[in-house]
Image (cartoon, rainbow, N blue to C red):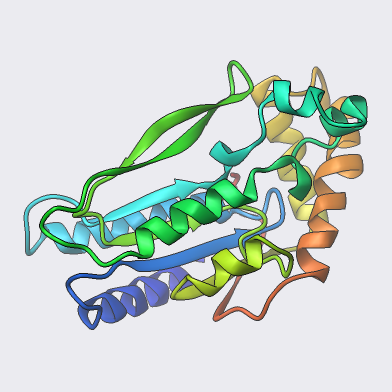
Length: 234
């Protein structure tokens, strides 16, 4: 995995050097649940910031998680079949894709001396709902790594957001490896009371979504292969 990351860091830094000063470099990192996309995006932003800090002051890269665009539990409860919506939370239809597209469009606007800080929502796992305006994106943050399940999905509005990205990356993982990661994650996060319940959730929700993510994927610029690694659990 390290060799893949090092190559991608070099690639991103090279592209950034050629990016106009009034523009952002925007990369969408997608993959099925448990693929490692979150960890990859965080590693990439940290590495790019380390390179930038060696030559400048401040930080240049940010990570924007798609998790903040979950529909709230109240919104799910208003759907025609609220029980099904709640059970399938995490599926594409349980996200506010249009709201995500609005942010991507705003970040794509040219930067000027009067550009303001923009904000994205985060997701509070304690209350199981998004937190509005919790992720600041200053005008100085010019390398943006978006991460989420549906960022290369060939369905609207995700495909419209994908067209605004400079690159699409996909983290590829064996479904069995993802399943084991998800079981551990669900138990640790309190989403499931034990491994049996966690495996049921993984099989009946996460990996069902994963099949759509794989089958309906757009063409991407990078495919990063994620295999089992104790340090690559998220």
